[in-house]
Length: 296
Length: 296
Image (tube, rainbow over all chains, first blue to last red; front, side):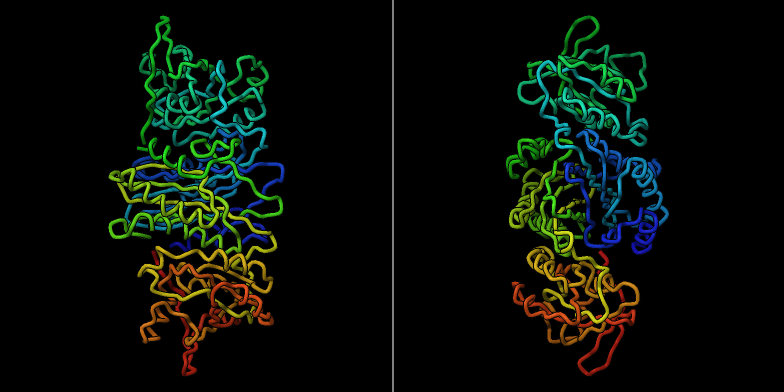
């Protein structure tokens, strides 16, 4: 089946250049503009942890596997260029299963300008495992890190949070446009994507003695229930939102930024030097949030 | 344990540059010389297929996982620069297990000048799975592909073949020096590494109607038994040798090449236009070899 699968891949993936062995050679070659800096990320997804092959469509599982990697590219302010894909499939997997899995991946790759240029294929007596490495590029000065947050920065997210496992985690579009727009603004100090939950991922951009005060009334919640306490709890701890979390200098004029972005953004709090993350409730009371999140 | 493991990794891996978020950011940045072409390869290894956690030391399993990737870099005539590592560990894995696994990997990384710049970590109720993507660079004109073999090329391998699973597959050194030397010789037409067995990997460099005639007496066998028929069978079909297989133009003077290489090389046959791979036995008789190899 491997030979048949690789033949199908070669005919389905965009043609490699004539000076590139491409799919089927020992390595694939890459080209970068001399004035861009390549960035790299890798995420491995496995059945029963990140998806469920018995209840979720294979094309969406394939799509998600690439999307979580592209979300990391977006969080650097970079544009995706290449990806390589390692599959370890259960023994009962058919060629049609592989094709469905790959079709979801290839569709998102094409939508985002990502060339799948190589990979590896094995089968075993165990769970479906998909490991993808994605490579993007950005101007060096535009790359957005996590450790560059400053005190008094305003904290934003690009969309509603919580309850992603109801379906959003399989169908989300990585925030590549938002990431590339944020990259153009020097007042945007830190960017990350929300994978483990708002609190854990916010903590990751609060280096040293930095802390934050969040406003309960400002947290955008997916599928709100009317019970705002339950809703914010999902927003803080569910994870897999794949929205961007970013901080902006206190003095910055964010008018141009919000105008450039395609969707509304949500201001949720401010960076301070308390070394803890607190939530201010609508009655003015404050509570400290535990730094825990979604454990896969 | 993940947090503790990442702290250990950060203190163990070479320091990232101050402008690089490095381990723990969404992506890692890469730098390439403007006159070099980056190449990329990915290989995923899984317990009970590529190694056995119950009977093999974890540091050698870690070493092998990187080494098989570096072997692909060598087979392009490239020099390794970066690697990213995705681990999916069984639930019972301890921090000490992770450290032993990584120590084997880091030792080989340091020996070969490979910077481990990122990764991903998950645990599950299933087999240890290690997925590595390695990136190297070469001068564009020096890159060696598989599809550039010419009729009448002489066929060589860099070392003895067969019976690798007795131990060699865990301890081999990827043929990086040999690959970089082969890259300097335009008369070297095609290079690959032997992973699936000599016959399958030779077939991969015989594009179109190219075939080959091998000389039984010239096949270098690991641990020869005195039964040359059994020995060549191991050499043809065992796989996981991670020696380089390369072809050289018929008119080339290979004196300078053999002098530059640190170890003996073995000339095993010649490329023809028969579209099959044949073996000439010492009595002058010929037989056609089946294009099958080691199925993991």
